[in-house]
Image 1: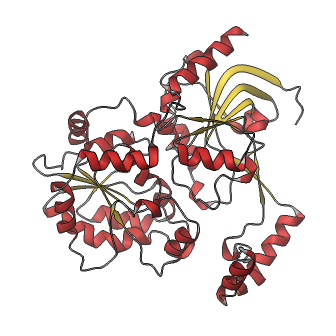
Image 2 (image 1 turned 60 degrees about the horizontal axis):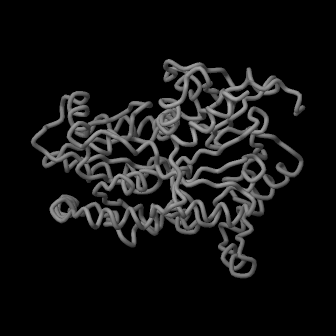
Image 3 (image 1 turned 30 degrees about the vertical axis):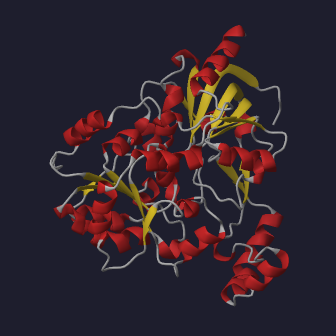
Amino acid sequence: MKESLKVQNKVAILISWPREFDMFSVITNNINKDLLVVIIDDFVYEEYERQGNVKNLLHLINNVNYVLLSDVIGKYKYKYLFSTAQTFRENITALSFIKYLYGRSIGRVVEASKIYKFFLFLFNRPLTGNAGKVKKFEIEQIERLVGVKTIRFPKGLDLSLKSYPVGRWEKSFDMHLCHSNIDYDLITDNFPSAECVKIGYPRYENIVSPYEAKKIIYKEFSDLDESKPTIVWIPAHIKIKSELGNNVKLWLPIINKLTANYNVIVRPHPKTRIVCPNTINDIIKSDLIVDLEFDREMSILYQASDLVLADYGGSVFDSIYMKRNIILLNMPHKSKFYKWRKYGEYLDNYVRNDATFVEYNSNINLIKKIDHSLSNSKDSALSSLKNKFFKEDNNYKNIFDIIREIENEINKT
């Protein structure tokens, strides 16, 4: 790409998924609108979860200038670009196709025969070539093609201690914003020359009180009983094709029984909504209250909850950061998803050392667990858990200061 492309003296935010509107709200709500442009990712992907994504993104655009990525790339750049690194090109090359053939043939044999365990011991790599999950293409980050100063915005502390950060990020971003010391240390260890700044979870700062949040939720969901405690269930999206929606299917009958004692709001993952319509229909037919809003301001939902039921992923750390009571629902240990998370050393596995978790069992008395958690909840324990994963120090920087600095730089030119 030629460097002679015209540079727009503006701040651009690259939006790839509907939930990123909430993630980036701290920027879109606090920056001079004349300096801001939202770039909507309208690329075509193999990933089935992105089906209908562009339509949903355009539906959520509100009171902000926007452009389509396909109309921008190769034509001009923006002086500053924020991105979560979820936008990329899928390029099929000779090497990527050879890797695909290996994974689909030899890799599958290695995985099925359990030989990968020997390779793990010998080489610290399974040599499965990602087997059934291997893709025909290589991924190319596009941030350098549309931004001059590129800034990676963190999308959560749901990360693998083995594979984070992604190697291609090193040359794609000038700055990495981080949630805590954990992702900060992983990035600086792997990218020694990277500029990193810890910002916490800015979208969960300066939020409404639990009282005000409950008022908002009661107004939106008229079936809620204000005399009951409110539980919010936020199941993760399972990426493994053979187990899509299994965490919802397994736990739904158990959680449905809770409605006699509690309000239960379930928020399916947006990706699960797209790839598992039958699972969503099962939820709708249950006694649970279903939140299907793509542009949900998640801080409201968390603040309105008396307890969060989560399993894996970002909702675990959102709840910890906001100091909400939380119970984690485990997948069966024989499931591929459970093994994948354990092998990848995902951070939420370590949360289970300190937070209450429940193994899947159709006869589990979850009400007893919930009552115990609610009656024994202590702010000191919640603060201690938050401090373990989000311990602040003098190196944290306010996101508003970063925004002001960028605005000042733009206004100088």
